[in-house]
Length: 460
Ligand code: ZN
Ligand code: MN
Image 1 (cartoon, rainbow, N blue to C red):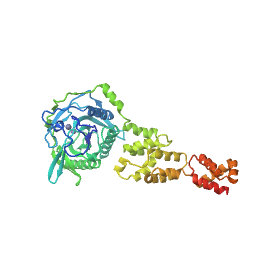
Image 2: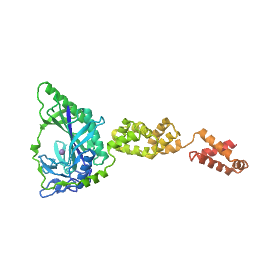
Image 3: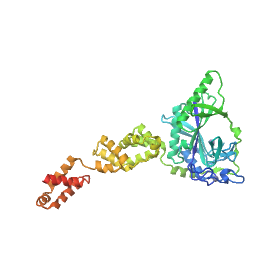
């Protein structure tokens, strides 16, 4: 089995690719439009600079060569969601080429190209009618085309998951598959020889789980055909979630069918080496670098590092909670053991909304490290903190246990004979000097009322 992926990623620029309409998701249908994104006669497109920058960032993060000059082209096809009857895309000279993404096995999956293009509108099927919302028309996309280097469902899943994280960490897209801001087309072929078999393209996979099912089904289908001595037709397929089967949509169009030609209303996209270097400087720590740092510098278990990095907000929380602690793994254990049990669903982990701060967790970890609380006790306290807030730490951890308080009270009495004799001589207020001594010795962890009661009791 050989798989190649074409992934469309919606860029989170503020405005569309060729006009200044908003790219915000949703909104009342057909309210984020203008003559340019509606393709009205005479309206002229102007390329959004941020789209090029985001595209370059994506290319650099995927080890691509960036073209100092690339071109916009018209891809002609007629469909109601495409108001101009052509999509402005890039054909023979894309913005980025020849990169790769490394899987955890070390295997490199080639990235043939990344080009920038505009999204189409959305068809809404309702009560037997088809409605069209053009708000999405003109929203910027990058299309990331992999080489056919993927050879199993597992590799395909890892590729998409990692691609998604890479894009999210560099901040070019939210990559929400359920909202359509990341969509995959999958090319699948099977062959008994080294030569590639005829491929079928499955369109618009909207989740990694569905993609995996579709690849599995399609590879089996093609294998069965070949076993029977039949041939695989080059087709474009859809995937039916309910039946778990692929079905033919149309026979595959060739590039010729799109009648590509240069977009006459836009000049070539020039970007200098200096500009490319400046963009490189704005890149945050890349996903692989982060993963390596977690494992090699912070000493996390591989599996734990990957789990934390799966959710950017968890990673951010972890980094804050573990700076300055001796063993970041302890913070990781508490996050993965206790907090992940508390935030059960994927979307809860994704949002990672907690009533405690990373600093609170750090305080807890430091207490474990200074042996003020045991690992076991720390888990219990964290569980309580997640529903009751950081106050739990102050009440529970900071409070001394009774034997510790006893010892500090006796010590205060021993070290302050003058105060003790004043108190015994009837100066009741003198007891406060002893309470103060206990508070100082406990570094504020003692409860003043409890200490006072204890001192009075001892001095009776
Ligand atoms: Zn517009
Ligand atoms: Mn495309």
